[in-house]
Amino acid sequence: MSAFVYNPVVLDREGPVPIYKQVADLIRERIERGELKAGDPVPSEAKLEKDYEIARTTARRVARELREQGMAYTIQGEGTFVGKPGAPHTLSRFPRYQQIAEEIAGRIRQGDFPPNRAIPGEKVMMRQYGVAKVTARQAVAYLRKQGWVFTVPYRGTYVTTKDKWPKNEGQ
Image (tube, rainbow, N blue to C red; front, top):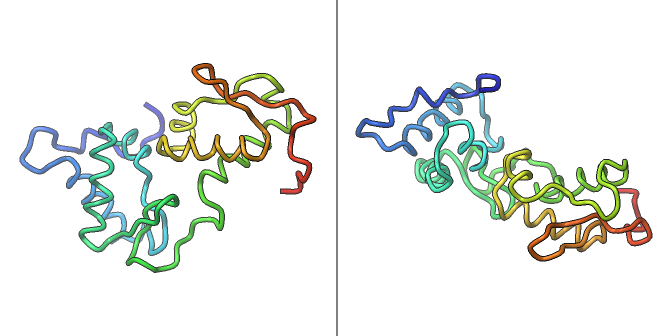
């Protein structure tokens, strides 16, 4: 296992308290200690899934539990944040899928992903960036819309040739 984040052993998987409540309590404790402040993102479903070795549905229930406790709020397409609904959040002005797409576009420009070669698939993006499948799909759709990539059904998503890359590469 990599660097210690949260050891899944701290969870009582056989006891009467549901796993999602145990994980939500651990996050609530981090909020109360000030490790997570108002506006900070709550760990993503993918990160919770990995760190605590729980199912995606359990991770989803953790966010719901934190919302029900009034500890967090969710903004569709951006994530779940510490605090009350409507409070400012510390996420970048760009949605996560755009941040991922920009990083991949930068790697395409650098030659890490050459034309007519595949970019990382959804599962790799989900693991690498700690995001849900829908976010990985949005990143690919964004890259496709900009002209960086094309998708071949049942094969993958590939880098387009340089002549099809976006002309305004300033951002």
